[in-house]
Amino acid sequence: MKKTYLILMIFIITLMLASCGPLPISVKFDANGGVASSTNLELKEGSEVGLPTATKDNKTFLGWFDQDDNEVTSTTTITNNITLYAKWDSYDVTYLNNGELYQVVSVAHDEKIIFPKTNPKDSFDANHQYTFEGWDIDKDTIVTKDLTVNAIWNSEDIMWAKVKAGIDPIKRTMFRLSYIYKDSLFDVEPNTFSKDLALFAFGAANSTEDGTTISSFYSSLGFDNIHLSESYSHTPTNSSIGYCFAHKQVKGSEVICVTIRGKNYQLEWVNNFIVGETGDHQGFSESATLVKDDLEEYLNSYSSGNIKLLITGYSRGGGVANNLAHQILSSDNYLPANAKMYTYTFEAPASVEMANGIDYPNVFNLVNSADIVCYVPPIRYGFKRCGIDIELYSTNLESALLANGYMTKLPSFEAKAGSYTHDIAFTNYVIDTLTTFNGDTSSSLNTRQLYYSNYQESICYLMGLMLKMDKSVITTIQNDLSSRSKVELAALLTANGLYSYLSNMLNSNGVSYDVPKLSSACQALSKLINGPAMPLITNLAGSNNLSRMLAMHAFEVTYSLLVNLEVK
Image 1 (cartoon, rainbow, N blue to C red):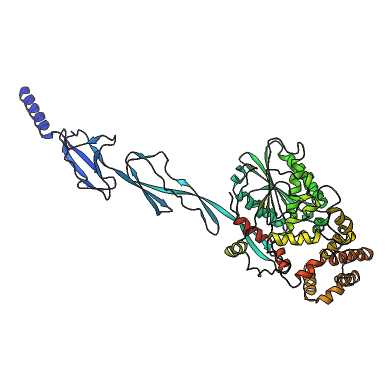
Image 2 (cartoon, rainbow, N blue to C red; image 1 turned 180 degrees about the vertical axis):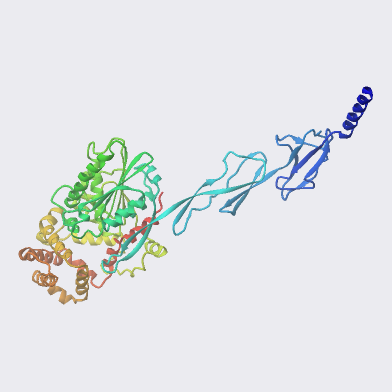
């Protein structure tokens, strides 16, 4: 019986083995962007494969290959499940920009990837700037199939500084200027001009109208320890200076920004005319020293770190910033040895005596040579800006302003003082006329010493009185004088006529004054008007040349030129 069972079991096992046989093998075909006549086959183990055909537009089929790039032919014996890949003489690398087709580049099989010859252009919208940073594939990729590659963009928030614009103090309106802040702004070496850093510095320099605005400017960007000078909380005087310090830790460095007030500084404007008898511009130098002394104490909190110091200012603020940079750079051990200092000034008057005016490579002065502020004090007085001047003026100024929508079209220029055009030549004409007077030296301001002895005290006193009156009164005076005939002006511009006119104006506005000082100042003003300034008054009467030249100092003009500056 046992023998019978054993024979039966052997029979059953033999039958099962005979019925199973070899399992089928799966062969899949990947046409690699083309079309195969068959995509899947099942073969018996050890059998040869019947290969399908493959086609692809504008490509030559080179055969079927396994994943190790071994060619498989119709005589190849297949022993395992396998996927075969079509090989073509070249492949399409499709480049997409924000999901849209940018370019298709054909690359030969087994060759290194080829990028488009031109990259997508950087762009921006109302709140962001988009900078192209490359493609999402390694540059050494070997192409063995069709590829899709996407553009990589870096998105950065565009910041907006809301400031008042316009040369007319009454008609000024709110204006938005845009800039980009990123911590990497301070990766650049101080000796290398950076337009992005310049735009950021310009945004700061034109947010100095009041303490709240400049504080908000920096706090919104993550800066801390914001320090405002006392003059932001007190009425400015002719010896005060407004400034702000702000700090931010960036990549292990202590970034400190020093911003000098360049607008809404009221009586501080008088300081601009205190040239002094010798040395650097007295007013700017004394103001810079005040900032320097306070900054030294502020820096002590960060003396153990790697300091990166940015100094910036616009107009008067630029003049003080330039002198401050000179004082710091010419001082021994003011900054730690490893500190880096950046300085960007805008439309800055000259503040440094020529003999001291070193061309520091890390001090950049952005100047518009059609702006008369950049010419004062006159070079013949022996002043200059330290550092490197970068010219902003462009012969395409009006088109730049209009294209950016920052100003309405300026009035057509009128040439009534000889052969000159509106730009650098006209500004030089005004300066040269005032400082090449051939008359009595008691009326001259041809040299620094003559200005100091003949006019400085009187001009500063008159400026101080005018600035104590409401801005609308200044506009009223301007309109009144421009409406008078030459005969009326001639009578008014005598010493007695000026005293009578100004004293009445001061009395009606409740501004007290010293009678002898006002009388002396009116005598000096009359000498100036009837002496060095008379050619300007005579030749430019009824012309808009002077007002247009003054408009060149409006910050929105500087901004337009800076935005359009081509950095070589």
